[in-house]
Length: 289
Image (cartoon, rainbow, N blue to C red; front, side, top):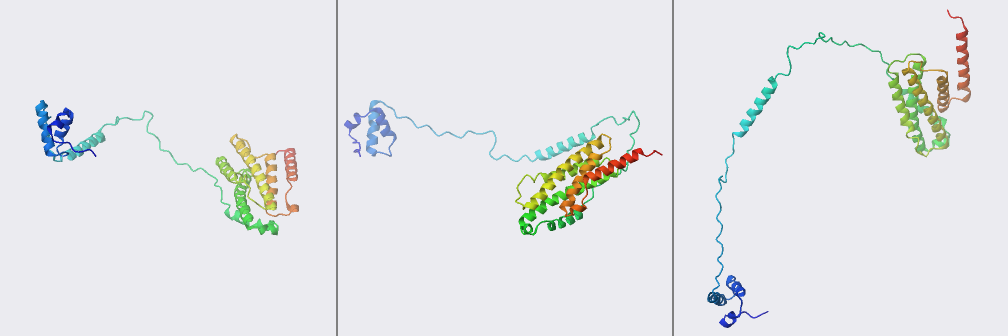
């Protein structure tokens, strides 16, 4: 640490003006005699000490610090809004004397339109699901996890199939109306609920997998036949022909197999088709009355 500066005149004379000014302007850092001697040396040299600037006085503002609240603004604003609302309410929006050149508009009468609502097949579906476990081999029924998945898929199948069979029977009996296309779309959505999950491996037992494959085949046939029936109806033609009836019979065979109907009691689609063709030929050959 350097020794303190000596207050002697010789030592101060060797200092520069800047060093002397620093001593004179910082009296708290040095001995009073040294500070006084530095100021005297500056005075001898004719160097004036800078004068500290006077503290700025606060400028007076036009507005006082505490501005009284303008309580008159809120009532005035409310009155203005009320006036605007009244003006808009009474503003003319058109010619009050206007009359329809075609005369008064007639009132529309409600016309009752007969519709066919799709019935619920919940009870039938539950009964069909109750029959299916008995058609499985006993070892496969022990796999309760696979059986549960199998019955979930079967429920989706029967929900779509029962609705499809209903629409077929309605078309066969000529009891469909303008709601038929929409009912077909609803039924196709049910089939999509089944086919969309059949792309996954559900880890089923062999017989269960074979039954699900039959369900998938029936779904493809039903989707094609329903779409064709809808197109025929919209074009003004009969919604059924011999080919569509044959496809319906092929699905009926699959239904019977899924429910455990013995093979000897199942219908034979080709025989049913031949019988219908012969009946139609006989009808056309008979004299018209």
